[in-house]
Length: 214
Image (cartoon, rainbow, N blue to C red; front, side, top):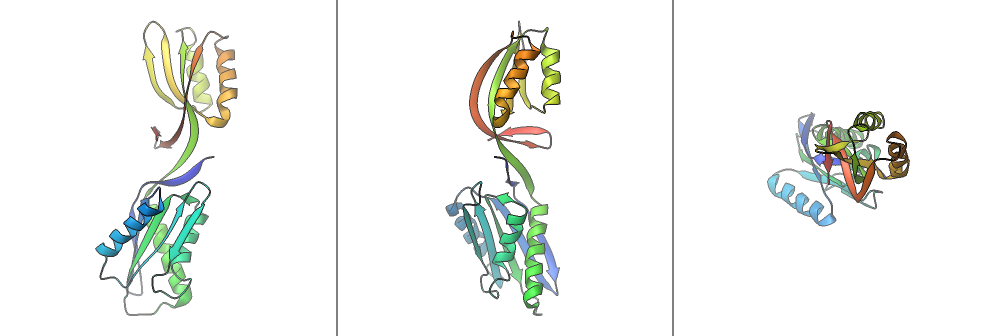
């Protein structure tokens, strides 16, 4: 099942009535990683009034945590978390650091500020969609390579590497739920002459046209 996550974390900042809201975003894979990052942010911004946060872990948001860190109940942590859930961002922590500017924002103002800061942090990050696939290698002759390349282009099947010797070897990744149908198309396209080496399951993402395997 495809899911969105952070590939490279970023930082965004907004100002509201002279209060600074600095949102720092990082990918995480465990609660320990989240807590370590939170501790690092609190150490870095030791002089800030608040370091509020939220994080999600799991492809189905199995773990969700958030904290207002001294802000009025429900005005910081939950709004940060709601942005992550609405944007469907998995395995991610956002820490929003607030430097108080001297003017109270009120409940609604705080909610909007923390949400806006979180959105700014996400906008400064690289968000990707990870999905399950299977790495395959196709062995074919030169007579069918053009048809196979056309098939993979039409089906948006990413090619990892092609090797040209006496025959042609193509390493590629097929979405897990399309493996059977794609192999049927390969058989039809090459009239059963291509050989396929079934590979292993992988998680991958297309990042600006480049396929990254995790």
